Length: 260
Ligand SMILES: Nc1ncnc2c1ncn2[C@@H]1O[C@H](COP(=O)(O)OP(=O)(O)OP(=O)(O)O)[C@@H](O)[C@H]1O
Ligand SMILES: [Mg+2]
Image 1 (cartoon, rainbow, N blue to C red):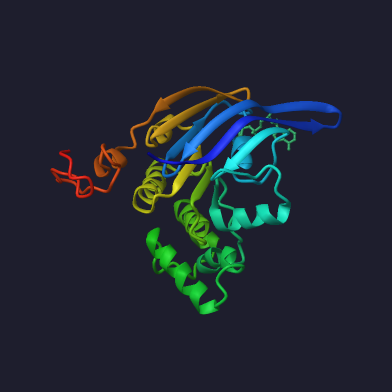
Image 2 (cartoon, rainbow, N blue to C red):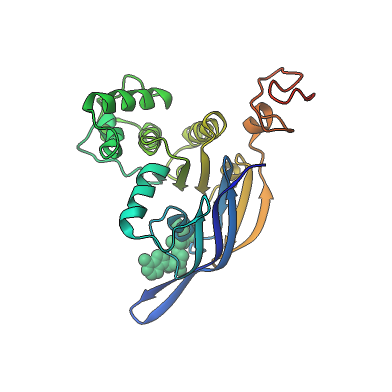
């Protein structure tokens, strides 16, 4: 059985606009297990980004609790939350948010500075990550010399800099054409399968969401519906009995030996 990695209990978030209260999340309960690939859909203003910000410890709920691996993070001081964000969570945004004056490799190296002390080590890891997202040879390109799909790959490599347990992606395919859109989803799905990274992705695109394993629908700050996605790759390469890795064509699971 997978363990809960993130648990939200009765989480509400109300913003203040002057004296006016703007409710964004309302008594929301959610549990995400380690290794899940979850998508969040819902109309504009339904609270998707607010929810992602809570999960990423970028903002605190007005009430309710967020447990990260059983630890209540809602009461933690900012300096501890900063460490959690740096070491456990990778963020991917619709607009990539790359620094324009740094090249691809330097953008990926940036979050490593607090963690990897040697410059050579950081350089090497950044190049490896860029290779992993299919950008070998593009290390020295600045963002404006990369296509939108390539820029999003750099931002995924940057999110992986400190080997996070969780990736939170807010509309990562929103600015991409359909070919690049599926390339990025495939990349995320492979990370989920091969490295066990837990991924939570906000999207407006039903076809993109259907590639994940669990689709959540948000409306007025509440989860109103949940549906199983296809996550084709996961079905194909994961044992249905023990969730161990299997290869295409395996008749028995190499881990639990059960018939597939
Ligand atoms: N900083 C803020 N101050 C005040 N109100 C805010 C703030 N951020 C979000 N809101 C409000 O909270 C509600 C939820 O916003 P949120 O950005 O989470 O929606 P969303 O589902 O991500 O929308 P979209 O699909 O347009 O990105 C909206 O009513 C929004 O206007
Ligand atoms: Mg949003």
